[in-house]
Image 1 (cartoon, rainbow, N blue to C red):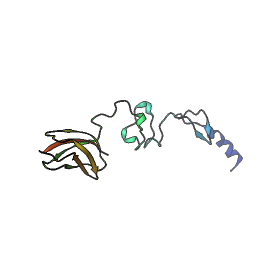
Image 2: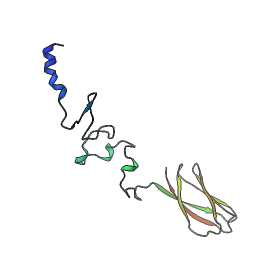
Image 3: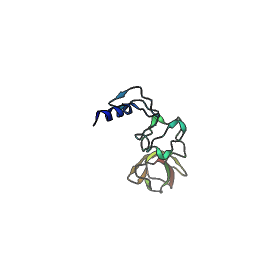
Image 4: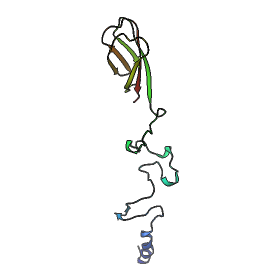
Length: 147
């Protein structure tokens, strides 16, 4: 490259983008930035102008610590309820649930003449096991958090 050409390019090495305000550099990389880059969004945009949309946020970029208190409401919670009947003379009753669901709670919806010994999930089958055989049909609703 000619010396004259290099002298003309020299000032271009130090031009900064107005979008960035660098306090210092390491290997030519800016250390302070005003915008959110592609590592957290699918595009680049300035947070201050409210132009970030949910479609722009990459999967798993928002952590639990970044959620506001009471931000996860009933409308956002992915849950299901199932009804289970333990027939008279039996000690167990089953229902089909979403694989990987977690039991949040249960309540009796009718007769309950025996204590519940266990509620378990294997695959997509939820099983309620009573401490003894039911003397009449026992009915329950189970609330589950979907995976």
